[in-house]
Length: 153
Image 1: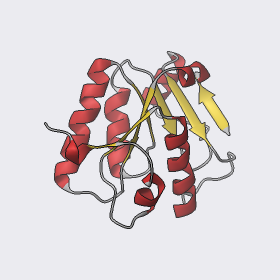
Image 2 (image 1 turned 90 degrees about the horizontal axis):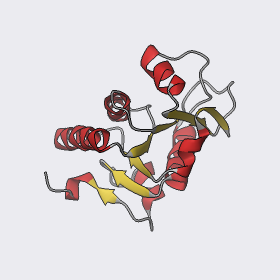
Image 3 (image 1 turned 60 degrees about the horizontal axis):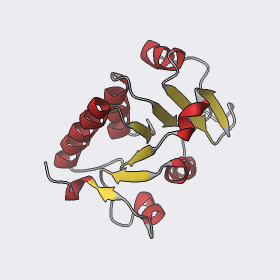
């Protein structure tokens, strides 16, 4: 496992966020509302940034001051956008990759491994949406998690 950033964040209570790539618009909006609430409350969130919903949630969280863990479905990049660099410099970001730096292309299997790592390191799980019969649904079998569709506005 490769890391970049503040590894002390792993000692905090962490909530993982997962969502299938394709999800209903209502779930996208609930995911955005959830992310804003987590940012305001300063909660440590573990997420990916491969699908559009994951990217959006991560970018919303990045605008706050709370600690974050980004888990990649590829190797760790050598260059990051300025907001990510700034979060790392201020010790509020940890980037984790279960893969070597040379892995640059995300595959279905790498995404599964990344999602498994998010589940493994998170104390609580929040799921925006899990497609029926999809990869995420299979990983969540037998796990305790909160489904955003079940959370009142």
